Picture 1 (cartoon, rainbow, N blue to C red):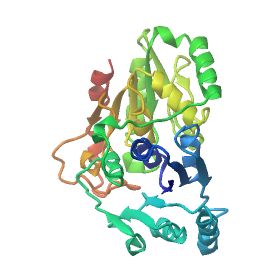
Picture 2: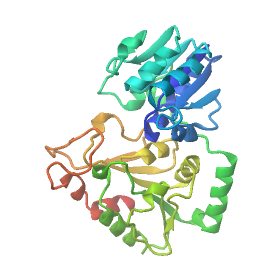
Picture 3: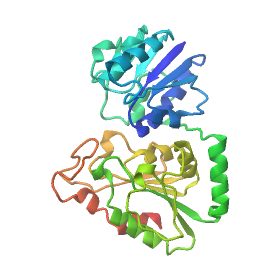
Picture 4: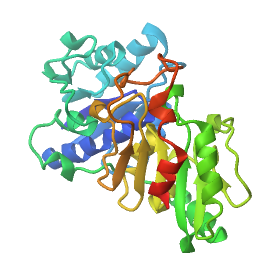
Length: 330
């Protein structure tokens, strides 16, 4: 059986789809799985032994516009897929699914262009995102038995091995801090992060590592020589390997939550401001905790956050003080 998954959303969304890959293999052990995703999504999916092929859909460059969609659709049609699973709710993915001409095309009932699917899957807002995604394939084990699976390559592991040894991190409590997010209101104030880092640096048994992409190097994080700044210095799977070895991961509501959830060791402290747990994007790991301000009548203000606080006070973040976070870290 030839199965195609289409998902071209953010990194965290792609990570949260990996339990579905395992479930497909449980239900259809002889299947061959092809995954269409963004170039960044392809990076995080590399080395997954259950994926036969990853096809990069560069919707902003090589495959931009209507012609780009039809060219990729033409290629996919030749693959003769038996089933297509469209996990993104945008029209572009629905059209791409239809262009494959696969006899079974699954997508959410609330997706734009849902009429192009042969079967619509109920989008249940009450479920965690992983549970929503797993509902595309019936049967199998209980949802919680399906884990996020990432596969750092040998080169990434060797680099982190060397780094860990050089910095003597095996003998310290490693706290990884991810201060970035695409959305401004999802970012805990940088001044708060700086206060936390300053206090952690006073403790000899703690090593602080700051992580993020190259675009987050511009964040004004203040630290001393004892703190390690890896922003822009790792691949996505290299970041996964770093998070795997951490004792604690302190992060905004962003992709490091989900990457860290692939591993049992790190305790994840996830800071939620404008967004809420009920949206279904909390850590999939049971070794985790969400820090948020309860009973704030303006939460949630948006499913993704925004460029500024609509009320102007930003209480959802400002009231999560550095002292509250330090109590959890130390």
